[in-house]
Amino acid sequence: MNFLLATIRRELLLAFRNRSEIINPLAFFVIVIALFPLAVSPEASVLANIAPGILWVAALLATLLSLESLFKQDFEDGSLEQIMVSPQSLLLLSIGKVISHWLISGFLLALLSPLLGIMLFLPPIAIGALVSSLLLGTPTLSLIGAIGAGLTVGLRKGGMLISLLVLPLYMPVLIFGAGTVQAGVMGLPIGGYLAILGAMLVLSLMLAPFAIAAALRLSIRG
Image 1 (cartoon, rainbow, N blue to C red):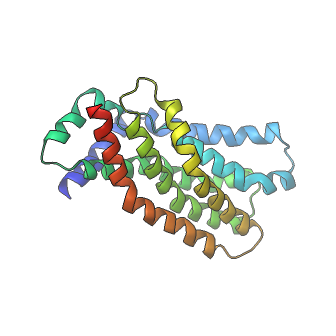
Image 2: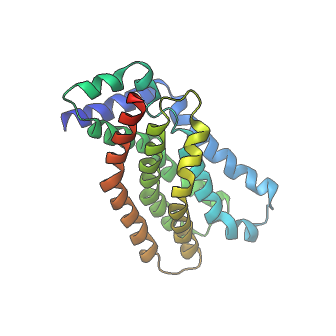
C-alpha cells in the first residue's frame, strides 16, 4: 500500500511540474467542443440534440491523447526494468499509474464538463447525468488505455498504435456513456445506464491491472 500511494504521489508531483500533461487534455476537450457549433449549427435545439455524443467523444479523445506518455518516461530511464527485478509489485505500479492518469485527465474532464454542457445548451436536468457518466466511464477508459500503452511502451511512435488497439474496446463505454446523457436530456431514468457503466468499471478493475502488468513485461522483455 505504501508503494501504491508513493507511486500516485510521485506521478501527481511530476504532472504538476510538467503542467502540459494536465493542460493539454483539458485544452483539447474545450477546443473540440468549441468547434462543433462552428461546424454544425449554432442553434440551441440542434446542439442540445447532439451534445451527449459530442461531449463523450471529446472526453474519449482527450483521455486517449495522454496515454502515450503513461509509461514512456519510466521505460526510457530504466525504472520499469528496475521494478521488474525488485520486490516491488508491477501490478501495484500499474494501478498507481492508472489512478494518477485518471485524476489528471478523466476526473478533471468530469469537473469541467458542466460548463461545456451549458455551452452546448444541454438541459440542466441532464448535467448530473453527464457528470455521473464521466465519473464512472473515464476510469474504465484509463484502465483499458493503459493496456495499449503498456503494449506499445517500447515503440518510438506508439500513439497511433494505441488508438488502433483501444478504440474498439472503448465503444461500449462510449455508447452507454452517451446513452446516459441522452436519457437525462429526455427525462428518462438513468439508473440502468449507470449500473452498466459501473459494471464495466468493476470488471476493468478486476482484469485490467493484470493485463497491464503482463503487457509491460512483454514489452520490456521483447
